[in-house]
Length: 280
Image (cartoon, rainbow, N blue to C red; front, side, top):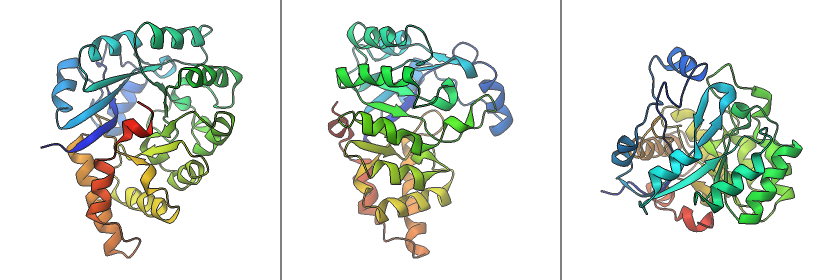
């Protein structure tokens, strides 16, 4: 049974090889276990309930995580059901060249950024230079613009409103904010509603039904429910748990009189053609 049409947010990377301290240690402190430990064969099995999954590289050396572009490109090669996204830290002196190579030579089709993890501000010139490259190649950009569990992150770089300048500067660039930008979902949704090609994903909130219910309610109120993309954040969640969490939070919205979010509304999120919306 297909849970979703597109999962816009999945990860690769093995503990001790791609994922190190401090994030790896903070993961255990926060959750009591290691979750980010995914071998390629495990990723393939986990994504079989979805038609197409986006697989993210992550160049976040400041917090101990480097999942190389080459590793992701090798994993998705010959698998039409998987789409690889590059990640480049704008702070690297050769950042723009790395992104060009990722697109032209490795065949990666999008860009993953996480300012709080990569230690840059979205308004930095180096970031805007990288956006110029993404805009040139018309590749979509996913932003982790929200909180995180690791103390190695820089929290002041994480607010969703900081992306308003990026969206104004590159109005044709298709982008989305991961995890509803939690805990700043209202801020994230108020930002994306102002820009035609700006979206948001529902990943990793199935364990936070109250936050998710509030985010779904705000999306209804702002009339951007059609901008919500299905994402699981595998291995931190799965497509099955994400879909169940969306239904649970929709039921909570109805029960508390927050918003009339129906199972049909949730079906639309699960089966949304996110590839078309993102220009993929």
